[in-house]
Every structure is written in structure tokens, then in C-alpha cells.
Amino acid sequence: MDQNSLTNSLPKPNGDSLTRSAQLFHAECENTLISSTSVNLIQTPETIEVSRERWFVLAAFALFGMSIALSDVTSPILNLFLKLLDLDIKQYLYLQPLFYYVMMALAFPTAIFVDKYGIKRAMRVSAALFVLHGFTRSMLFFPNFPYHETYRIPCYIVSSIIGVEMMTMFFLLPLKVSETWFSTSERSVAWAFMSSQTHVGSCIASFLYPRIIKRVQDFEILAYINMVCTLLTALSSTLLVTKSEPEHPPNERVSKANQETPKSFRISLILMITHRDIVVHLVHLALFESVSLSFNIVMLDILVSIGYQEIFVGNLMSANLLITIVMQVVLAILVHGQKNPTLVCKLSSNIQGLLYVIHLLTVITQQSSWLLILTSITLTLCRCWVTPNLTNMTAHLACGTVSQATVVGFSMFLTVSIMTIINLTFTRLIVIVGDAHDYSHSLTFLCIITLLNELFYLTCFYGQQRSSSDVGVEEGRGEQADGDNLDIAVDPHPTV
Image (cartoon, rainbow, N blue to C red; front, side, top):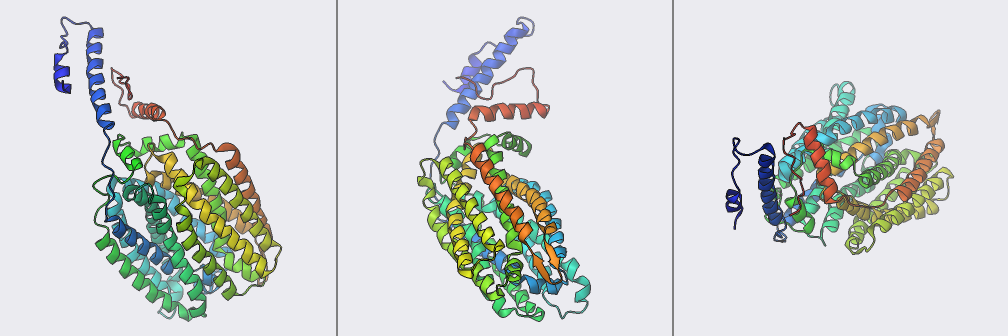
């Protein structure tokens, strides 16, 4: 007997003959039958099938990531870049929080856009922003243009703000693409491959730029590189990404997510913030990334200030990036074979934190170049092992609770918020005497934050996924807060 016939067989309420309690009972019976039918439909398994188009989507994202790094990376030639802008190191570092605030403001709206309009439109908007970014950035790289001294700082600020929005949208997508388009055995490798393409571009830039850009006038080369990258990215984003998702779910997580009732962004945010392990996990990631980025931004100046040559620093950065490109993809294959992913995440993260502190101490104490190379490469290998595991844990914790774009948007918001504080403290601790820069106090501060962060993760993270009943309770609270209170309360998970 179908749902309509069952519903029609119930006695119809009549206000003259039935009491209020009878009317309530009749409505509850109807809602129970409807919920029963919905549950039966949800339990019907979907067809699991992978699409060949996923390789075109992967290629488009790979080219985009590499182009972003090639057109935007200036850390291997930071000292020349500061001469182009006519800024000293502290002025440059104090200017960076402006772009962090922009990213904080855009993280959640961008996540909403990605969830609402899908991967295809998000990719094309990112490509359009990349075109604008490339145009304004190219103007900055022509120092012989008339009035360049007047417009260079405004041009740098505008291009950086456009670039922040472009990268915010782009960095929201790899996790969503890997979960939406790839099978269980492929998704970690796909995510690692997409994420590693920024390292490919950075590796090329770190090796090439110190060799071809030796004076301010040579920045014109970067202008032409920007133009080529912009053209290739616009074409690949338009031609290769033709849909946001495949016709059939490629893995169980997508199938489960498809069966969930779509949630508003506000309810998704409440579900995420009230999930203890998601918050602990994302705060831990944000703290480590903030420390790492604060060091990487000025790594060239730090190493040059203690006696290393720019070519040596560029070669070291290229070697680390090359290792990351290869090993992160290779080690991502092993992620889904873990029997206890929580233990693996905690253990690997703690080892990574200790290696990072050892590397920073090597820099502070100005050890030999061979020891610096050894600690740097060992840390890079460890990060290649840790990053796919932590990313997979993020997707695992978010599954059935929030979308990938929302959780990555929240992670970016946390990272930028924490990085703003850490970067300002790091900058204040730099001691400048004439042309010499002393970073020992700043690096000691990063060591302390790293150790406290690893202790926090070891003691507070349990790796527990939110149960479906908890999700139902939080959704019910969110609906009540929206003013959707009814005379008859319906259990979101009725017993059938």
C-alpha cells in the first residue's frame, strides 16, 4: 500500500466531532507515514560510478594552481620586490594584514557561493578574477612606465586584494572537487595532486626567478609570464570544466551527502562550531599554517641575514617543493588504508611539530648549510606524510555535517585570524640594526607556539564524527531559532 492510500485511510478530522487531541494524533500519524516513506527512500543505495570527465576537471585545476604560483610568487626575489615597491621589510610585513582581513571577510561569502552555484561557476569566476589580477599585476612589473612611482603601491594593493579573493575561491575547491568527482581510492591522491600544483609553480619560480631577475628592470619578464598564465587559465577553465558534478556519486561520502537534507549556511555553521573535534582539528591546522606561513614569507631575508646566498636559498626552496610534488601524491595513496586514522593524525602531527622546531633552532643557532638542508628536507618529507592524513580527517569529520566548501571556508577564516596575530607579533620581535635584521626572538616565538599547538592537539583531539541524532537535534534548534515553530512538533528522526 502506498503513502497516499495509507494517508487517505486515516479518519479525517472534523472540528465539530473531534477534540483537539484527536486532531493532533491524526497529524502525527500523517507525519510519521511521510517520514517513514522518506527514510525508506534515503536507505535506497545510489549507483556508485566514476566519470571520465574527472580527468579534465583535474587537469584544469592543476593548470590553474601552477599558474597562480608562477604569476604571484615573489618570495625567492623578495629583496628585489621590496626595491620595486620602495618598502622595507617591516613596512611590507605590516601591510600584509590588510590582505588577511580581506580574506577573513570573504571566506564565508565565498563558501556560500561555491555551495550554491557549484564547481563550474566557481571555477569561471576564479578565472575572471585571475584575468583582472594578471592585468593589474603586470602594470606593477613595468618599472619604466610613466608615473610608476605614483601608482605602484595602489596597484600592488588592488592586485593583491583581487588575488586574495581569487585564491580564497580556488583554495575552497580542491577538497570539494576530490570528494565530488573521485572514488574512495582516488580522492586523497586527486586532492594531493591538485594541491601540489601550486608547489610545481613555486618550484619553477624558486629555481628560475633568482637567475633571470637580478635587477628591478628585469621584472618586465614577470609581466609577460603573467599574461601567458592568464590566457592559459582562462581557456582551460572554460573548455575543461563543463559541469559541477557527475551524474552518479563516485563514492560513499557523496552518496551519503546526497541523501542528507540540504542545510542553510547558518545551520551548517552552527553544526560545525558545536562539533568539538572539528573545532579542535581546524584550530590546530590554523595554528600550524599560521606559523609556517609567517616563516615562509620572509624565509629568504632570514637566511640571507645569517650569511646564505640568494641562489642557495632558491635552490633549497626548489628542492623542498620538488620533494613535496612527488612524495605528497605518493604518500596520499596510503591514507585510506589506515586502521586508526585518529592515532595516525595525532602521531604524525606531533612528529611534524618537533621537526619544525628543530629546523627553526637550526636557523636560530646558524648551523652549517648541510645541517640546514638535512632538517629542511626531513621536515618536508614529514609534511608530505602528514598533510594528506589531516586533510582526509577534515573531510571525515565534516561528512554528513557540513559541506566541504563550508568547512574549508571556516578553516581559512581561522587561519587568517590567527595568522594576523602571529604575524604582527613576529614582526614586532624583529630587531633591525642598520641594514642587519635579527630574527632570533621572532623564531623563538614561533617555536613556542608550535610546541603549545602540538600539546593542545595531542590532549584535546579524539577524532569523533558527529552522530546523525546530534545533527538532527542541532537542525531542530536552528529551525526553531528561524521562527519556524509549529503547533505540532515533528521528530526529525522518527521511530518507524
